[in-house]
Structures are given as structure tokens and as C-alpha cells.
Length: 275
Length: 317
Image 1 (spheres, rainbow over the protein chains, first blue to last red):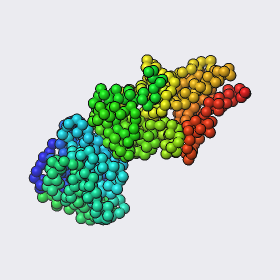
Image 2 (image 1 turned 120 degrees about the horizontal axis):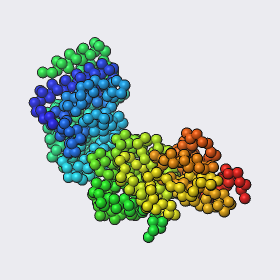
Image 3 (image 1 turned 90 degrees about the vertical axis):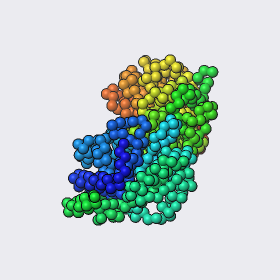
Image 4 (image 1 turned 30 degrees about the vertical axis):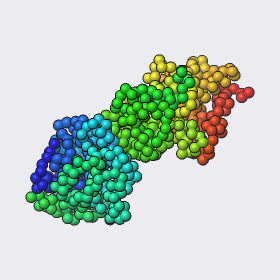
């Protein structure tokens, strides 16, 4: 389990992960860069900052923390992490986008991946089941999921929120990548998002609002979550396309592939950001 | 009390309770359905029983999460709501994950005839058959229902079990070999017709065979309680020894036992006369007793006898 506490080092790693996702998207002409870049800092906090209790040498360790990237289309943010930590080989990552190779969603054939993704609204209920299993077995592992903000409109999310609140699953953490852009829409602070934290709180959860690009702030919030007596929702305020100026807050970059010129510009920005 | 006197629901759930009382990893979840024989289990093993409320999508997702962490999960509720309502959850989180979760659909066929098309279970076999990883069990007596609970517990993957209601004649006994998922109840050799049925309709098949006997038509009867994977090889052998096949199916014309048997016969080189008597391909926006629906659909015993006589070329008396 990585437990890096130097913020500059964690930011450097996040830049490196973004760069790998960018290069792979261009190489294979496939990828969801906008929603990948918005959640890379959250993934780095989980995997490198000590957020998740996991062991790459034992992917099936029964007492590991469970993590489901519900927005599995951001898999290009996770693949390089799994390679870097030793869950998966670089050769395997290189098959991304090839027929029969790594795909645009996650599956359990990949060491370190807990769940098959692709359909939204499922992971929170699944994680609630995992958290409940830990309670039943008096184990200390925790269940984390990272949801997209548009995904929170799914009815099954609300069934799971109600259930977890009632069951007081304080070993369950739901992170929301609040990047404010869905596939076709801008998701402003409308009545849904304005009432979201209070609604979830009223159903028996603790809620935090955090800068989703501040890894220290994320780690501090993960620590708070560990002492909560309730399930915890962390709304991570993020920027879709974060790290590349021309991609930020632009619907086009949900799943566009950069041209050669755009690649160079993006690369320069990501490399420059690395201290 | 012999198993034949026992409501098929009690036979299944009593066995499940026995299993659950021995294995603390067994978890039973319902969407707020009351089952008489689970009341004691609920009291004795409160940590292993969850009423998750009327939230079937979440019921399946929570079951999947529990199963992925080592629990043996059984979920139950009224059949339509634990299949149709949460189908994608089953497809993605139970089936694609290949988890040992058993989905128990209560009220097979037209057991809830009075409650309308939302409760009529006429399309679920076709629906669940589409899921490649899913096994489907449809017991038609108490002994095979109890066996289904054991099969589900011993199984390694997703399973769907349809549970009827009421008492049924005893077709199986606990010493039977359940491995092929079917049983020849009346010998097919030297018979004029072979009747194939499952679940509730097996009782009908036996009654029809008796009625045919009195008209000098010999009918073999096969009960199939495991609809998927169905034992195609045994059925091909039985078809080879039969003069004609009649399927009785309390399901819509498409997707149920009629479809299953026609697929087997169509792939088989030996062709025999075959008819499939099923419910119509429609949703009944009507309310009534099961027998009323069966009469109107040509699935009552006299109508079936008439159809069989026509198939075997006998005049209807």
C-alpha cells in the first residue's frame, strides 16, 4: 500500500497519469479524456496517498478495501495506476484499444479491478453490500466508489443511499466527481445539485464538499470519513478536462481525440505542471 | 407429514432455513414479502435476514456486493419484481460477475391470477434464459422444490428459481437422482404421445395422461424442473423413443418451455409430430382464478386431451 504524504510528489504522479492517459488516447484514438482528467487527482489520493488499503502482491487479499470506479469510462485514469503499482503489466496496458485488449470499461479480468463497469448507477448499492458484508464478518475493510455527477440521477443510487443510511454503513464512502458536465449538458447547481448534500444528509449520511483537485484536502477528508459513524458522501468539486487548458470545462472533450498539434500543446501543459 | 401434504413454498423455504441455520454465511433478502416458513428464521437469525424494502434494484446490487465478499445470498419477492424490475442489475452485477446469488421468484405462472398482468408470470423464463450465466429451476412438487434449495446452495453461479404455491402430488422422492434436471414420470416407450411439462403443468400432464389412458391412448410424461441448462441429450433420446411430443407450458408462446423443446427438436435430425400448448402471446388485462385463465387458454385438462387426440389422429369422442 502506497502512503506518500508529500503533496508535490502526489501532484507529480497525477500529472504523469494524465500524460499516459492522453498519449494512449491519441495512440489508439479512443478515450474519455474529460472525465478521466477530472478524477485523476481523486484516484491518486486513493491509490498513492494512503486512501485505499490494498496490496498489489495480493489483489484478492480478503481484507483489502474495495474500490469501484463506477464511472468506468474513466478507466484510462486507472490503468496507468494499476501498471505503476504492479497490479498489471505495461504490455497489458499497451493492448488498450486493440481487438481483444483492454477496453473502454473495466472488468474483473484485470488484477486490482473489483467490478465490471459500463452501466451507471450500480456501484453504490454493490459497495453497500460489500460494506455490509464487512460488518457482518466484523472486518475492518471499507468500500469506496467514485461516481459521476450526472450518474446521481439514477434511481438505484437513491435506493442505495437510503439503505446505507438506515444500516449506518460507516465503512462506505461515496465520492462524486462533480465536474459539472454530462455527455451533452452543463450540470449547473440546479435544484437537484443544490439540494443534493442536504438530501443525502437527511437520509443518514455525513457529507463533505472538497476541492477534488487538492490531493491534501482529499486525504484529509478520507481521514475524517474513517471516524464517521455514518456512511460518507464526498462531493469532489472538479473541472472536466483538468490539466489541459483547452480541454477544461468543454463538453467536446468528453470523448474527443486530440490531433497531433493538440497532443503537443496538451503534453507541454501537463509536463510543465510537473514540478 | 409427507412432503406431498406440504405447501411447495414451505418445502422450499424450510429447506433453505435448514441450510441457513447451519451456515452463517447464508443471507436471505426480500423486497418486503412475507413467507410463513421464514418467520422463525427471521427471529432466530436476524443477522442473516434483511427486509430491504420495496427497492429491487438495490436488493440485487446489495446481494451482489455481499456475494462478492463471500456471502451465500438468496433474494426473494414476487416474481415479476425480482426479474423484470431489476433485470439490468441481474445482468451486470450477478451474471457478468458470475456470483452465486439465487433469485427466488414467488408466484410462478398464473398463481397470482387475480392481481393482473403485473403479477402474471408468463414471460420470465424467456427473459431469464437470455442471461448466459443463469441457471433456471422450476419445481412442480415439494420434493423437487426442497432439492432446488440444496442445488442453489451447492451451486457456483447465478440461479433463478420459480416457486409456485399450494400443495402438489408427489412426483419425486428424496432418493431420486436429480442431476439431469428431469424425470420420466410415465414411461415413453410404446406410448402414443409424450407429454413434456414443468412446474405447475406437470400435475396437469399427469391428469391428462390418466384421462387419455381411459381412451386407450398411452401417454408418457416427462417433468423438467431444470429449464437451464436443460438436458438436451436426455430429451433427444426420449424424442427418439416417442411417437409425438406435446409441451404443456403455463407461459407465453414465446420463450418458455415450448421454445426450449422446439429448439431441441429443431436441431435434432429425427423429426416427430410436435405441438406446444401455451398461454397466448399477450398480457392479460384481466383478473381471475388460475383455472379460469387456463380454461380460456386451452390449458385445462379436457382441452389438452382434445388437442392430444387430434395430434395422434384419434377422433374426439
